[in-house]
Image 1 (cartoon, rainbow, N blue to C red):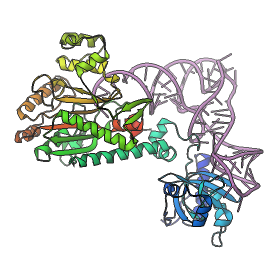
Image 2: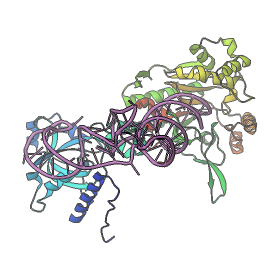
Image 3: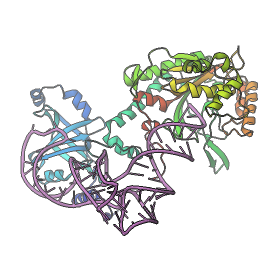
Length: 504
RNA sequence: GCGGUGUUAGCUCAGCUGGUAGAGCACCGGACUUUUAAUCCGAUGGUCGCGAGUUCGAUCCUCGCACACCGUACCA
């Protein structure tokens, strides 16, 4: 492009107008967005190296450093100034004195610097020293404005606290809130920690389709979309389960996938329409093994990220160090409510009646298992603060799980609850193709009688099982919720970089 | 979906039984060569979320709408 455009400075905040006009002056002097400065150092590295150095020793060493980052604080005292620069590691102070930076080629540099704004991105180079108050500082001999910032940052002391702005403009939140940066650094650490853990246990990381012709592997309402070239309906996946089990059929005995699931359901403090799950499958294991394994994976992550198996969540401690409790659904109901006894809970009419009283109704053909589950959710779920496995789920709510060898009404299935919410769900996989076909048919019937979340019949999955799925255990861990626990975040939106919001 | 609460300067927040708004920081001008949320002096900045109604007069009362947060429902 040839001519510099006139900026539109109508209808804007006075601060933005002021900054645009400063940018115009910068453009007039030459390249406004120079890209030739290369920092050699980062703030925290310098602190690590020299914070403990005595002032005089540091003088003798004569260390030269160069850094780049955003100017977060600025204190001009006439012919010398201090500025605080923030880079990816943290912050470091600059000492900028007129007589040290002005030169024959650039006699006005200091007066330009005085006009630079908080939020501008700078590069600076100079000797590392300590001030009279012993703060590690770079005595700047070269300084350059790399990126002019047009928009003012939130206030330097109170920062940004408006939830909506934090979510909608995460970039601003990340600039000014160290807590937010820390949460997402931890999230990244959790992801890589889980990968390390899985790889150390000989799991193979795989990727399976996000676009499914038949949504399966969970009971949930899917997002629907359309593929133009194939002219077919497709669904964003609600779970990778059926594909991962096909891979175990294929001979990949241990696989895992960390990726998004999409469910077209409500939003809440623990629900986002797309969320991250790790699902893993291990041939020749069963649900007791899965529970041990899941437990040690979570313990590993907590220790890696927090440095301890004890985590503070919303003012209360969660201890991942001790062995996780195991309760059956009925035991859990009895533990947290004295309104029932064990015989009552095995009686369909009783449980149904108990739920009716709570104003909770289920579709007509729901059986004892479904009612027990609903009652468990009403009475016990929210109380399960310490990590607890609820085991032996009813078969009617577990269409993909292997039935118990001794009790055909229950499955070898568990869900893990921590801080009153579900974190993981696993079971010994149903590997009897004929049984699976029957269970799919029951799901289809439920769907036809109005259960929107019931599963579809997946004929290719049945075909895969007919080739033979080894006895296998499989489990899914809700990563966002795990991150919430480890980062002490009250809302799932706090652990998603860009949570979904209505259009502004 | 439903219910509650909220929306005032760029940011963080005051305020008003209805008489058209304030502070701190930021920004602008000035002083200041080791500051630490620098300090000191001075100035600027707002269709009080949007629309309608009541009223002589609405940021404030009423209704509607938008968005957010919390709870609840569905769900992980």
